[in-house]
Image (cartoon, rainbow, N blue to C red; front, side):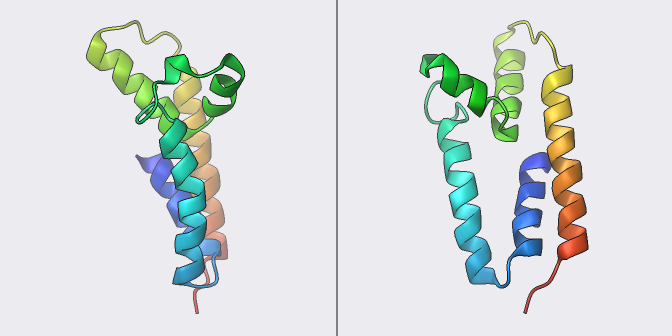
Length: 102
């Protein structure tokens, strides 16, 4: 949740006004939600697409929750946590530095 919200902070911090921020957020969040595994099953997507989508922070969190709820082996937890932490750190830092709304 924190890494996904930090992307929203980045959009809000770098956009010129609220209208452009909402358009940019829709462009960023819609594909992330569509391909994360929440709407379409992640396992039926082509392997090349899975590798690209695996970088999205929402995909990482959904995969971890799915493994925890179904009792599946979580495997390497370090990669998802690293991806989400890196996204959070970068987005939050840029948004704090660049915040400027009219």
